[in-house]
Length: 174
Image 1: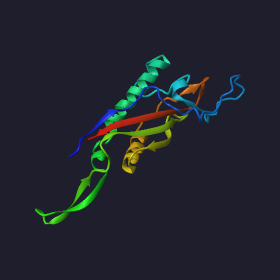
Image 2: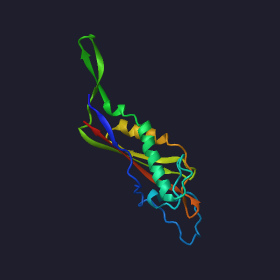
Image 3: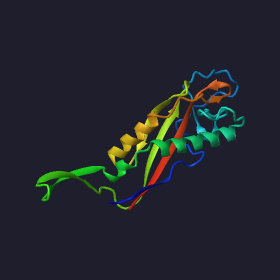
Image 4: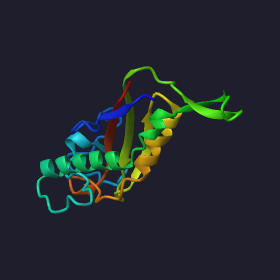
């Protein structure tokens, strides 16, 4: 049976939503209505994950958020899914019946799941988008993202805004 290892859970301070970012007026004539989306890398006040509330600087809070996301992945990602993405029926002569057997559908090497989402103005995860090498891995990415707890929302110029976040998961298939 092949072994699967989660190698890398989160690259710190990564988010590449700049193409989707709406411009916020510098002269503050336009009040934030929460529809603006700010990349995680440049947010004035990063969303605060439960357990990071006592930290005071944005840098510390970003680091804590990244760490908590890594812990969330380690705790909730079902690595058994990788071992059995698809099955086939095979005849078992000893039991004299057909049984389901897992088949290897991923080629050996490092595989990645990319999860992009936004932390909304209420602190809840929204707009989840997952790219994965197999539909079951995509479903798992969506499942674990929906388990992320509600946070204190991020702010830009004092207004609550949506914050883009990318969560890459890498694993090795042997």
